[in-house]
Image (tube, rainbow, N blue to C red; front, side, top):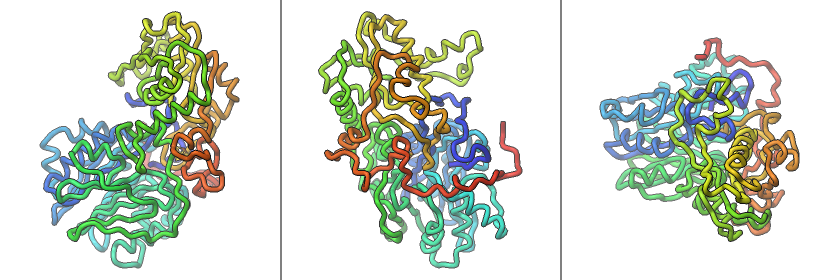
Length: 497
Ligand code: SF4
């Protein structure tokens, strides 16, 4: 992720990207690495394509051919950047790492596209990161004071400099030494001439898993990236684990002190692809169970259950199954919303929501409708969808949300609005219901969410298992940079407008 100048953690999201939805939290990065195949770049491009939902602004691949590293990074979608065989042909090698990125305002310049690459005394090293370091600014300030020259404004580059300055040997010990100094959420891939490394932070906030394709090893963010290349899921990388793949095969070390596991529960609710298996849990099944628990906790007499597509679909299926109320696709989503239509002219701006969603009147008119969505962030999209469903003739509109109220921003690699822009930080449930204009509104409880995730006793406050800070304000990793009040400027080079 990029640490921009201001605001420091959660820069306003980029309104110009076609896939952008201002009313959702956004995952910021995807990782794919492979070792041991002559088609390393082509497999990586396919893997990144399967992970496009985790970042749509830019992508990059670095390969190693036994003598040289090759690198191609650009802004855009994976298919546009790596769709040409001529591009893949330049990325020679039997090992590769790739990265998708969701840029934030103030950090969208090409120099921030990952993987980042640097020459060290031991050779080249490419690095790709999913997550966010929470003491990166403080470390950067210290490193600059010591003479380090930064090429980007990413927090990720801090890791490179820490590796460069480490006096340990071999490379893996330098990596351990460097990571011992950083705080935050990180899943990392590194590629050197000798090996591919995969690392997960000690709490395992962001996902990372291992796969196998014939003799090749793969390390990637989600299992859907294994499916696309026909690879087999082996296991998740454990929190605090470093996996090293080289000519000898795969080995694993756990050099960090064991900590409480705190995987991001929002990955299960919204970020991950429903066909992925993460932390041994099928994402689609988890979402259905959340919908069932939501129906159990918050029933309402109604004629039809309608998902807000696409992310509300599995929870709505679960809600319908539990409640016995019919499920219908009462809202249809247009997947082809292009850049041209992102900022409609003022006099038709109110039509904006219809660019993406349209009510399927036959299943709405005269009905008591339960709309099921995965979360409410600002509430502006929900408000427009409710209005649209009412104008399609709904008799009553009830909204059920498959997450607890999102009261707090994320500092661990998810792009979120500032706290004061989150609807749930401004209103109680009754106030939110009034704001979005529904007859009733209810959220799954935090205990209900944990029950749906297989913990019958609900959330154990002393041992919560997941990171759920955006629902509870209980941040499991210290936010050192946040407490540093200095006005910061990471670079004197102007970012593109
Ligand atoms: S704060 Fe929320 S979005 Fe961020 S890691 Fe924790 S659960 Fe996930």
